[in-house]
Image (tube, rainbow, N blue to C red; front, side, top):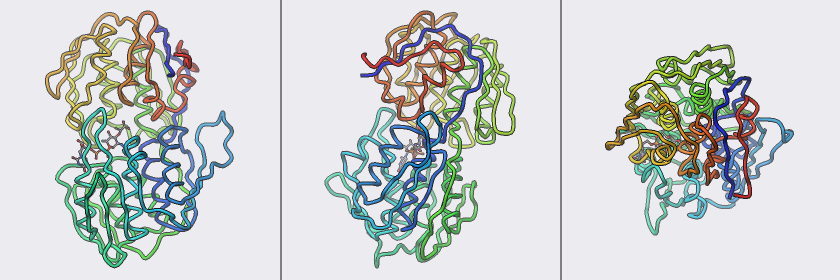
Length: 427
Ligand code: EPZ
């Protein structure tokens, strides 16, 4: 089982390339199921979840070929050819390992007129239901039947009719699923209170490049006019705003000046605002952001919210950073019911954090001390890396497979800007 070892105390200086966005890639890949023509995705990150999704697409009968990227390059080019689906089922053993697999439900249903997908089950951060995915699909004509842990969706007559749905709460995945199902419906569809995350905008832009007709991109109301079929396209995955924000937190607390390359600051408003409020220097350039810090941080009060609010995917990383702030910070996690799994691990390193329900009070401490800690979920594992970068002595983070789901070549990127970090494969 791999571990990552960090010896804290180094400042971070230099240029750190940001990869394509995991959460965009995982909704762009299933788009290819909507057409029998090739879809080529550029700037695809080299991540376990992306590989896992590729295997799921293969199981459905689509081929996935990686083109022209040397091992040392960041950003792969993948062409997906779903000329003929050989299966319309996403099995439990795949879906339980990667929740994003549920995003094949809408595309398979739209393409084949029926789909059978395992319910994903919960994960470390919450029970993660898919009721909103199902209600939204029903609203545009899907007939659903649940049995034995699977949902079977059918489009009467083989094609969805379209319709209207207003989400009671914002759901990124459910918005993505119903969008991908609606673009080739017979009629038009109107989705209200849709998620507005940049990854949704990326999805809409890719679908439009494939011939879809979508109005209101980037707003909470999406109008989709169904078209008979979509064609192939080549599309570049957006930069990963969460990866970028994660490394910004690392530089903020370690001190130094790091240029995050290939990012779009426009996607990171709330994160950059919070960094500035903590006293971190943030300079926005054309396609990079320069983060500079002397390691001294002001405490913050932050509450997670759907985009454009402060991202729940940034909560754990900010918490690690604020463990060293000059005062008490208050973080409130409004999106997931159990996203404080990193707290006991940070406490092992000397952090002073009190959790009351959805709120965590983080009292800044003078020093963190390296310790053996365990990753529990993707963003929690990044918070332990960030804490390890400023802790005295050595931190070893176990179960780094969580990290490999969302951070491409993390130890290489951090070493290149001065961190004393390595992967120990013998742990
Ligand atoms: C996406 O998950 C992201 N994953 C998550 O990132 C991210 O934290 C989340 O959006 C919120 O931004 C991917 O894009 C692959 P939701 P998703 O549906 O779509 C509840 C990471 O670290 N809900 O917006 O599953 C749900 O329980 C991951 O990269 C229902 O009740 O999130 C949650 O409380 C973690 N019923 C809230 O809505 C549903 O049918 C928001 O979930 C669906 C969701």
